[in-house]
Amino acid sequence: MFDSLAEKLQATLADVRGRGTLTEDDVNAAMREIRLALLEADVNFKVVKRFTNAVKERALGSDVIGQLNPGQQVVKIVNDELSALMGGESEELKFSSSPPTVILMAGLQGSGKTTATAKLARYLREQHRSSVAVAACDVYRPAAVDQLVTVGGQAGADVYERGTDADPVAIAKWALDRASREGKDVLIIDTAGRLHVDENLMTELAEIKRATSPTDILLVVDAMTGQDAVNVAEQFAEVVQFDGVVMSKLDGDARGGAALSVKSVTGKPILFASTGEKLDQFERFHPDRMAQRILG
Ligand code: GDP
Image (cartoon, rainbow, N blue to C red):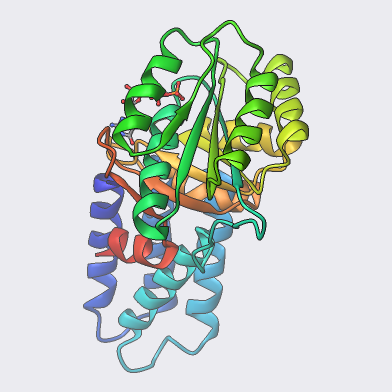
């Protein structure tokens, strides 16, 4: 995860860390290296600029220069700012006080939504001891319903499906009634994606939202698409008030840009990271731990 970015940042900071003294020129040179590494990792350029300015301001303004171990202080500042960039505190899902908690999964086709639906079901069963049902409302993508039956079943969730002929809004309503009747703690609704953000997709999401009043709306974005993932999240944010992001495919040679930019660009936190095709390759996203992982 983030291998090339981590390598470059670590090399730059190792250089800084080792210095007994540090001049303003040294800080400027390090910021140039960091800026390049972030841009190469596909981090949004405005985000990069804000980030390096923030680090520089603190590094030059807080009497770091001339202090004992100035390099280490700069490394700490980079670490803090990187964590803040990704949201700082890790955020939680909301749970409804009158179950079922309804979680609506949104995202483009291929983003990893159906996989994330099953992974989240498994996670909630294991970590929160919740009884979970998943609803198959992606009636457009061939085999999406069958896929959810398989992976949802593997995750130990009840899979509510009515094939591909029914209307997704009707399925969502029916699934909510059934989850209430069957006393489920959580209902996760897998919705249909599209190749691009378009009006049909947004209308359908809005209707499912109206019909089920979700407790949380999660947007699944594919980290491998880099800057595009952030653009997609920005487009969704304009129309659907989602609560948080599931960043999928962070295991690939993801260059990190999406994970680093999405909070800053959309204002929405990353709640979960999906790091492989297997159901257990799914974890809470902690900005501080992620920053440490990147900086080594
Ligand atoms: P959907 O169209 O959004 O429902 O996408 P799917 O859940 O079907 O995922 C699309 C493809 O990406 C499938 O082949 C998944 O196995 C794969 N996939 C999903 N999440 C991950 C992940 O975190 N890492 C990797 N490497 N592949 C993933």
